[in-house]
Every structure is written in structure tokens, then in C-alpha cells.
Length: 302
Length: 290
Image 1 (cartoon, chains in turn red, blue):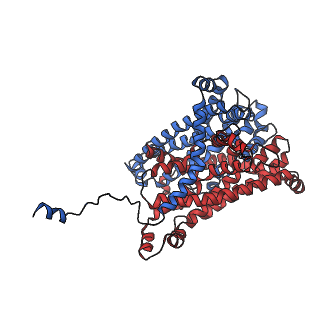
Image 2 (cartoon, chains in turn red, brown):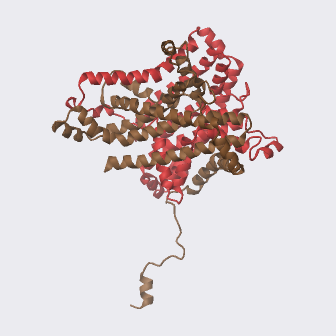
Image 3 (cartoon, each protein chain N blue to C red):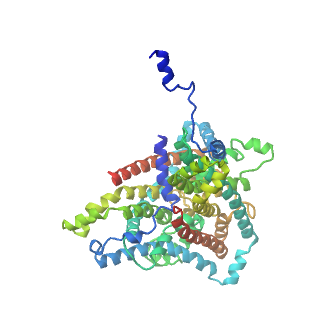
């Protein structure tokens, strides 16, 4: 049962973290011309594929930048520099700077424990690590409201102690951590499993301690995987909308992250302001894709 | 040899076999960090969901999840996701095929762009798609005169769902296409099959399991999607309202039991989907190695 869950999650993961699934060097494996399609068919298929990607991917990219810069650079800057937008940028940076390092510590230690040891309940643990990938973001946010909200399980206790989690920064950070914690673990785990423990065990027989083995033997092997996980984790922490939207309360200038502020500005008919902020997030997404292209081939190389 | 001697020759069974996780140090601290973190982030909040669900009476639960408005949201969420996943399966197959098999200028960029929907915040995708498909937008301008409404109509929900599900089919089929044994195709070609016959009888059956996995993944993602849909759909109850939005509406009205009931339905749906995806994966592995 647990195995079934684990492998189902494996499937979800492979596409969701996705950003990773394809082996490099596909071009070397092109079939010989005799086994390919006649050129009009090839041309038609290529045109269709590019048309589909153009319609669903390129048009949105162009539209964001055009709407943002369409009324000139000075309008862009002034709409971007509104106090509420700047507060949103600050909150997003704070959230990511808490969520990402915590998830790196968790991800590396989870990958270590899963790849280096045998223990009962391991596949259940792997399933739990993948859980956020299969839960709707709205439901992810909801579980925190049900626990920590005013009418939640711990609500009365928190209120009595003057603590506020939901509709405040802690809730936003928690929801962000929840949706992003699998990314680092999921990138590092397959690399650690792939490379085995021989070198770590050799280091152990030579007298190295646990920390020394990690820093000098394991870390150099998985550093690109960690970096890749960090980039994916960061992109999602800065961009998460659904889960954060549920716990934020949308208090202007206080609990709106960048993606939430985009929604607020858009609903206020401040189109340029919304797209200006969106253009920053689009830039982040494109930078993530470029970083993926650079790091991916290095991941499994020694 | 006496019995006593035999016993002393045989390896002495230790009184209590100590279970050893592995030889490397660090088991306890790493397991400790992992479990503490998972408990704080996942298990405790999930316990909240369980406790809140237990507070619901069966009658209340049933009234919420089978009301007309809830039923309409299932139709939009699950129906829309099904159409979107079909579109993604068909178009994604072609995109994956082209990326795996042909050489053309801009291929590396096209390949990278497939992942954009995973890297882009959903609210940005939402406002961009709305701008494109609304009345004055690049595509809305072309469609609206013909009476075709995409933005603020059910079609808009499907468009947003196609966007978020786009990478899944491509990224599940592409590696399978690259790994396909060329000898099967060569044999088919030598035996006189046309290219179309080879595709139908040799290539497509090998792709089918991964195609269906990709379909299921795209479907699962589209059902749970919230951010990109709420902008383009117009959020009209009974017409373009999706399940996650109804959950948020109930939360905003402090109707926690209602929101919880719907969340339980969604989680049950995710569970069924996961089992399906799992079965498809198993089939896909058998197809590859058997």
C-alpha cells in the first residue's frame, strides 16, 4: 500500500518537479532519415507544435511585458514603486528567505536518511515528502486555517496567548514551506541513491566522522542537485498563489505577497501596476528556466 | 560430537538481534530533523483537517457536498479538467514527438518553454491569459465578433487548465520517445509497413501507457488549480465556478464545516487519481521492460 503511494507520487513528482525529466543529448538519437516522415509531414508537425507553444506560452510572456511597458518606462517605474507593491516585494523576499533555507536543511537531511539507511516505514516517509505535489494549493492553505485560524483547533489557545498565525506573516511562511518543501529533497534524493554509499563507507573506514563525510564526500557529489532544488524551491516560494491566498487575509501593505498583490492591483483596474509587478515574476520564471538549462546537464555528472 | 560441542561450534545466536539501519553515522539526527519537520509542517495541520471533519455530522456533510452549487463546481472542475487533459494529450504528444525526433531552429528554446507553466506564478498566468482572451485582447478580438466567448465563460476555464497542464504530457512522453528501441521501427519499415502503419502499430502502443500517465497528471493538476482560473473564469456560480474557489468562498464566509466537507471531497478525488496514476505507471513499466 505504502509502496503504491510512493510510486504514484514518483509519477507525480517526475512531472511536477518536472522541470527535470528529460535526458540531455536527444539530438544524438535522431532516427535515420529513411525512418522519418516525409518532409511535408515533418513541417506540418513542427508548425503545429510551435503554434501550440506559441499560443499557450509565448503569447502570455509577450502579453505580460507589453502590458507592463506599453505606456512607457516612466509609467512602469511609477506604477511599480507604489508603497503597497514594494511592501509585497519585501514580504515575498522575507518569506522566500525563511522558507528556502529551512527546506534545504530538511531536503538534504531527508535525502540522506532515505538514501543511506534501511528502516521500517521508509516508503511511507517518501510518500509524505511528496504529499504537497498531489494536494490542491487551496486545500494546502485550508489545513492551516483549520488548525491555526480563529475558529481552528488551536485558534482559541493562540488568541488567548496573543499569537497570530493566520492572516499574518507566520501563516504565509508556513503555507509556503508546505507547498515547497519537496523540491530540494526530490532533486537530491535520486542523485544520492544513484551514486551509492561506497565512497562514504570508504571515508568511514579511513576514520572520517559524519560531518566530515558529508562536507568532503557527499556534498561535492550532490551540490548541483541542491542548487537545482533551491532554484525550483525559490521560484515556487516567490510565486505560490493558491495556498498563500487562503492564509493571507489580503491585508493591504501587510500580508500580500507579490502574486497576491498582482491580483489586488488587477481587481483595482490598475492594469499597468498589476502587469509591472507580474513582469518581475515573469522575469523570475524565465531566469528559472535558463538556470534549469544550465544546471540540468551537470546534475548527474561527477 | 556431543550436543554441547555442536552448539559451541554453531554461531551463537545473540540473545536480542540488534537492528542496524546502516553503517554510516548520522541516522538519528537526520531522521530526527526529517520527522520533526514533517510533523510540524504536514502531520499537525493534517490532524486539524481530520478533527474538523470529525465534527461534521453526516447530514451536514452530505447537504454541503451534494448541493446544486457544489454539483455545478464538480462539473466545471472535473469536466473542464477532462477536456483540458485531452487537449494536452493530443497536442502534448505532437510537441513531444517534434522535440524528440526533429531538428529545427529554435528547438532548444521551445524545449525550455514547455516548463514555463511550472515556473510561472499562477496569478501572472491568469492575468496574462485574461488579457489575451478578453474582448480587446489579441485573440479575444478575433473570436468575439464570431460570438465565441473564452474569457469569463467556461471555455476560459479550459484554456487556463490547458496552460497549467501543458508540461505534464510532454515531459512524460518525451523520455519514452527518446528511449524507444529503433530496431522495432526498422523491422516494421523493412517488412514493408508504411510510416503511418508503423506509428499506429509499433510506436503508439509503446507510448500509450505514458500518454495516459501524462493525461492523468495533467488532469490532477487542472482539478486542483486555482490561481490562473479565477481571473479568466469570471467566477459565476453554477456556470464557471470551480471547486477550489467554492472552498475559498465558504472560508471567507467563515463556513469552516462547508469548506472542510468540500476539501474532503477533493482529497478523496486526489486519492482516486493517485491510485489511477500508480496503476498506469506500473503498466507503463511493464510495457517498457516486458
